[in-house]
Length: 213
Image (cartoon, rainbow, N blue to C red; front, side, top):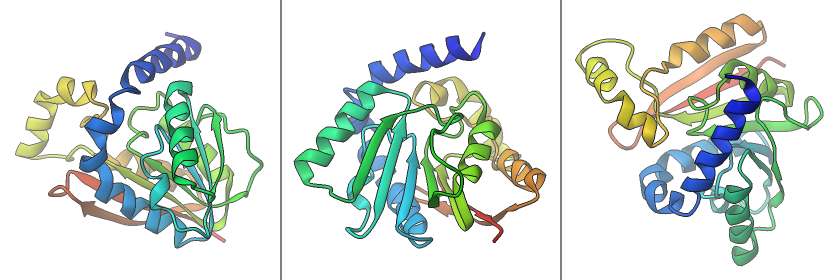
């Protein structure tokens, strides 16, 4: 399947999800999303949120932040824009339809790039990560919040059995954090500085990847 065909299928899937996305994800992901936002803003005010979706986490940023959000889905972004307008989220400086593997921003623009619950869904995650690194200032961080599959053991076996269900709601247990760690090592200038468990019971994890100054 070509990249264009894959992108088209993803757009259709997100269009179906958009009306019920908040109901399914809001409370389940809030703690992890807040942790990602806090880690991103700790790097500096200018943050890119890749895969911003319906904007569930936009209200978690402090007023001094300068947040730019991108997403592949116009339907998702329409709902994010509604949140910005209804809640007066002046710290949100822009929301754009954009493919995270082809970011239309200049290099070294952001203090942090955060991607929450999307990196395991991107057809070419390493390409997306390289784009995140490109638009990141030296010393800045990529902050990922995601469900990562267990590398081995009985839980890993159960995850593999449940993989079709997990994939249907947007999480892939077959995607291990080691894949991102391998990417970071291959770049020569990115380093994983933290990987910690989050609510609920470690299902989500926060990964911070620092760009060497």
